[in-house]
Image 1 (cartoon, rainbow, N blue to C red):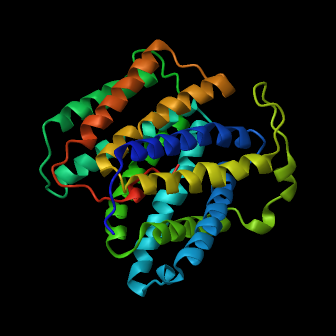
Image 2 (cartoon, rainbow, N blue to C red):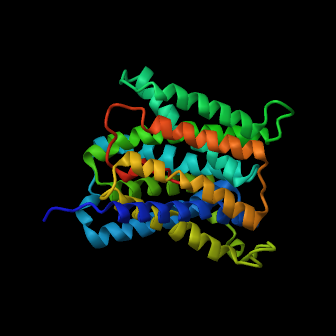
Length: 316
């Protein structure tokens, strides 16, 4: 039976997934404030998400987990770049600057992908790409307030920019990965690679289980146990939004999903303001609007059709 797209359902799913991803930034920052460092948080998140997704694949269609030797290099690169390095650098960034600003830096990745398509792959692009690039650069300048003393943490800015570069690499690897593998098993293996990389960087036997029972100290949320925050990070901040956006791809084209998904940094900024009291000034808000406008222009600048696949969603 042919599937009939329902755009309204797709929009609702993208918005729901974006909100869950957005809240994940603040929840992750609350967890980090209890003493969990970025590699540990990345490893815990990846391990939980991998277990959940592998269980889901086994329940739905176990045959999807078969892999060939030729797939291994791509799966390893895909998992290390997009599911280990990107979130870890993002966690480093938001621990040193406001959540919304860290996410805005990371959201410049689509512009880098469009530039790669133009100059490396030789694809035709629409002139609006250059307007999008200019808007992003102007927006980043406003966010960082470069006309005076740089007010953002230097290491945080470098981590955020590095996450954008690796996120662009993740997008490009996604286009190759989905050619031979379904997105659910692809993401399960990617989270698995991330979990293994994290276990090497922060061995499990050195993890102090008592950390899970530490309590947050926040005036808005009160005292929440770390295990509850991690539960949200794994289910609400990883598995659920990924499945929502994967489902939305059945109703909307990838470009539409990407543009609607730009609600994420807006919601993330609002949640961080309410919970963490992270305030952005007028120049930074204007810069954020310029960045989002620039990304929207870049998203629609490529002439070549994008892969219709949810793995083009940032793995935050």
